[in-house]
Length: 91
Image (cartoon, rainbow, N blue to C red; front, top):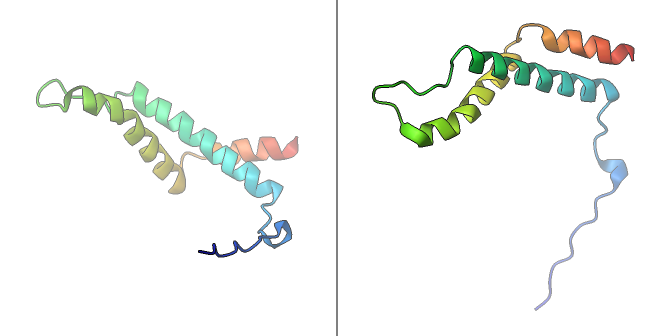
């Protein structure tokens, strides 16, 4: 039985990510993390006392909060990512 050859991938053929794109991605991640913490502080994702999902809901609520914060950033966020990006770009 022969194993088919794996095609080699040249590093030159891979798309290059610009420094600005990397900085913008990091800026968006920081804004999402900030928003997730703000949502947690506001009580978002906490299990209601009556008819809550119990401990399993508590364990996964942080994932929900983080996903919703990321969606907020995708929708334009609060402008923090742009400020972070501009500050990082100046450096």
